[in-house]
Image (tube, rainbow, N blue to C red; front, side):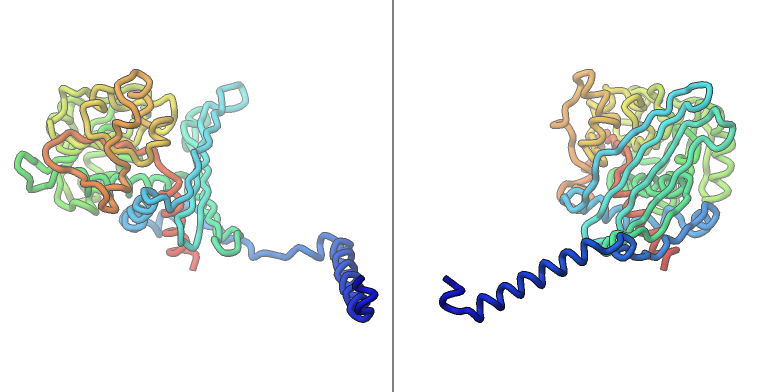
Length: 362
């Protein structure tokens, strides 16, 4: 009918169709190399450069903003992937986890691979790499060989944020302004630095089952300029502490409810695998329990143990930390016992990745 009414229009339409078909055939016939392009190579940052350039104080504000957005569903955070390297004659034992996330509106997103507990090798017990990606082009911006240093910074930042919102105020009635540390390794050091950034004048006490608390107390006193005392036992340390950071391997619980001040704040970061537990479930049940991400702590954090023995359900979670950071819920309200469960989220990895790229990449 088109040909009968308008021969010219028919001919024109036919030519257009043939032209489009010809272009499609030509495009598909091109060699693959003709359709690729050379993206700029990502910048590489070694461990020494990262350590010299970044501190936990750099991370606190950005990580807190990430927690706020996480509570508003403005962060895409998949569940972590865990890989167990079993001990054989040629490998292991060790654990690996892969985390990542994107904070809405940020210029980058991050994927992290971290390994821990490779003690058999005789070298460092683990390592890690952050890959920071451009959120516009999808291309890698930078690869940071951080060997868990950036992971420790974002964990410490979360610990500082927890102290800010949930710790009994230094001048509150009944407060001795004492912060305790159970476990005195790398995470304890970054937690102490974060505490100093948030509360500069605290008194520190510490205990480590492996006996490292004497060295830790001396080093932190010298570095931070605040008094640290090594305690003879975990129970003695807890009895003195208003705030307690726990960062142990998580193979066994590290404190008991009877050791605690009624208003204690426990900020625990040792549980990030389904096999770990630092805090007894009766402590969790008695507390105002706060998670970094409930869907995660219920699977790999302290909450998992309480759910397993029937002490708690997810409905017993008071808040996620971001809900307090953004003002949706109050933090500490009086002299209540509080537990803050930090398993580490992809939101924090995205945040510290952005901090690192802003500081080193541009």
